[in-house]
Length: 179
Image (cartoon, rainbow, N blue to C red; front, side, top):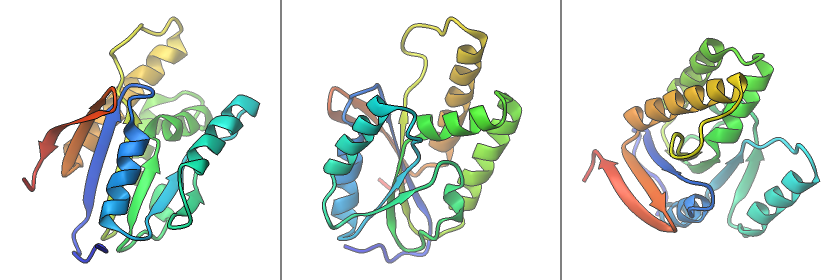
């Protein structure tokens, strides 16, 4: 069923690496729309990463429209569409590097992007890796990034209508303001 309501809707899906976040998000998007949009935030860093991107591309068929946008997702016209934004971790990495690891600038830019995205009427399924469940970063830059991602994840979860935590391919709904 196509999205027909005028109010924005955000579904935030978080969990560990390889927890099934992308598969769950794609299945949800196809339940909500016959023609969803996939917003890819990854940069093609090296051959290994290009192969990872290819695996994600192979998971989607002709029903999907793919858009690559490394940082400025709010500039995309996603009005009345269902869009999967995959993923916050890569999106933040782009801001973090381009802003020379300045957490305050990155946090402000990310919040502004999310706030502007909310101005569009549509459904946004945002995927992120959960942070703080593993080994602490050994470097100062790694710790700064962990802080940044934790704060951005908290911000997105606070404005989301629904939050899902993925564990070993099993979705656990932890917030749903409509149900």
